[in-house]
Image (cartoon, rainbow over all chains, first blue to last red):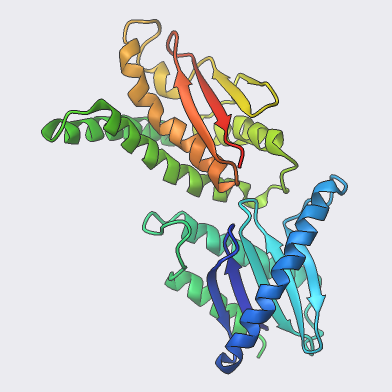
Length: 139
Length: 158
């Protein structure tokens, strides 16, 4: 379902990035990188907006010809970016949201692991498996 | 509840453990405090990540402080902070009139000089939580009569 999933730290460096197929990796790195500006823009716009628009899920960041890019920012300013094939029209906003929720839950577990150093790259196997399950679900 | 007692016991053992291990090597009070504070820092980082998972985005600094005083404190210490004061210039004073980690110890001034080592972990807890939410701070504790205590949070502007 998702073709690329990335976790970006507070200071905007990648903590985790995975994509399929592997040969387009560089392209996805680039897509995720460019999406960070949109994330920043959305978050700063949200501060001024109404009270009820304070959800962690940011929605669609921008569509390209082949892909749609979705974003999510936690309260600790960690960003999740998900790239989805735009031919996959069955995917609703709500499903994307629940996928991000799952991702967030899993990230929290990593963060609460005493052997993980905050700010390091994520090497957790549980996290890896969860991401894999989200990537292959539909394909 | 049983888990309340467990936290208290574990915390007490932790303080004793850290001080005992220091006794064998060098005897430096400051180093133990720092060690406890750093432990609290890491725990605070993890806890805040979990607690803020389902909350809406915070509006500003004060919103975050309120969260610490209400939700965070309730989850960890089973009560809210009694009084939060601020000068709106980056200094917050959190006052707890019946601080959970001190209530079992003494009520009065008798053991006042032992108080700092039982507050270091909590200072770290606050600092770690705030730092994970993007606020750098210095947290100090102050006790005039147990079990009441004050935590002063100084926000470091970047």
